[in-house]
Length: 139
Image 1 (cartoon, rainbow, N blue to C red):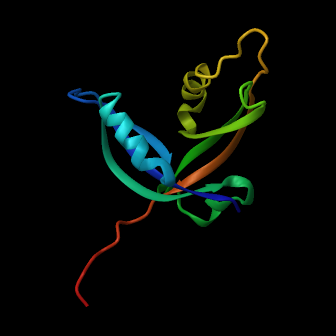
Image 2 (cartoon, helix red, strand yellow):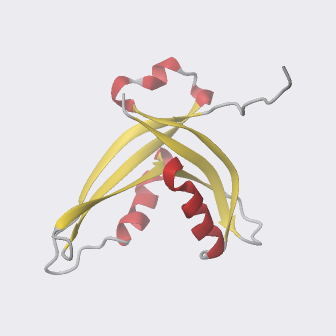
C-alpha cells in the first residue's frame, strides 16, 4: 500500500477573518512551501500536523472509523519540458470533496499551448490519517 508523509495545515490571507482552507503538503517540501506561502503570497499557515496519506487501492479506510481520516485525492500531472526534452512529474494533494474545483485551478498553471505536448493527468483516491499529537512527559 503506497503511502506519503503529508503535512495538513490551513491557510488564509494574512489579516483576513474568513475561514481557513485545508492544504496537504508533502513533508519533504513543507518548510519551503510554508516560507513561500507566508513571505511571497501573504498567507497565514495555521495548525500544521504531519501524518500519512494512504492509497485507497487496498481499502485502508476499512481499518479506521469515519472520524479518524480525511479523504484526500492525489493529482499527478506529467508536464513536458521542451528545454529538457522530457516529462516532469508534479504531484499535489487535495481534499476529495473539493478536488474537481481545486484541480481546475491547479491545472491552469499547466495550460497546454499551441504546439506543445499536452500534460498527462493521473488521480488516486486516498485518506489522510488523523494522529494525536505526541505527548512529552517525564519518565
